[in-house]
Length: 342
Image (cartoon, one colour):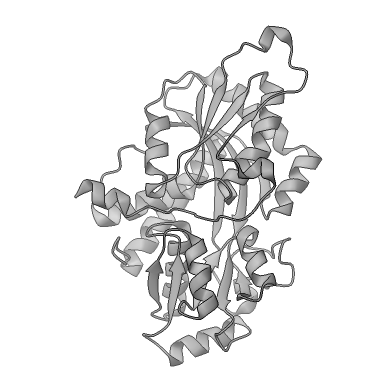
């Protein structure tokens, strides 16, 4: 039963999209150019990513790793460990030695939405999001876009809400899996608008877009990185962004508040963690390298180009962000009555 419950979180954040070849490999080695000979034999850092190559978290890792490697004088090896909502990847890092050589680059999924869904379903995760990790750095954030199939007769958010209410019980939204951020982003929209949309989980957003194209799925809540090619192809329309401000990748799309749903603000944040009991000196050294890398103008522009807003900050900011987000999603899941079977 426990295994089935954990697998209910599968297909987390399958935001797959074609990226630069350097971003799309399953594993990559980030090396410094002209690395000092005395440091060339330093043991590499293993950067565990809980999601597949080609998605938003993977893109963040592949942009950040080379810049971190240059500052640390160590190779940074990206290790994609997708599946089960990021639970196995998070457990791997939680059980690793606290030597600074195994890190987790993750999102809300493993430290906020996943624990919220686990609590609601009575499932015990194989790690504690607070006790089993050392927060190192807050990295960036990205909003989602409220997308509807081109077959839906609505061109703005108010029009979609009116249409969905007129067809209550027959309107649905897809996601990349139960308990994932797209699922809960849609569930919160459902709760705020009282639309009664039916959730249809998939093993990644690729399948959702195929159904949107046919009109069998009506809505999806996805990041600009993978939404924009489908918008350009005419598969979907973007009606609003879940950010507090408009996305630089979709500047013509209004915020949800502008479009008629005040209070609907959802972001995916990205954070860097180590195992519990990581020495402060190691934590600070790694965190400073990550924050300095994110302050580089070129890297900042590349992240903005894929829809991520750099927000370099320290371990306490990451701890606070994760705690507040987990409390929020626990409340949303409870009040909306969301279950693993939804």
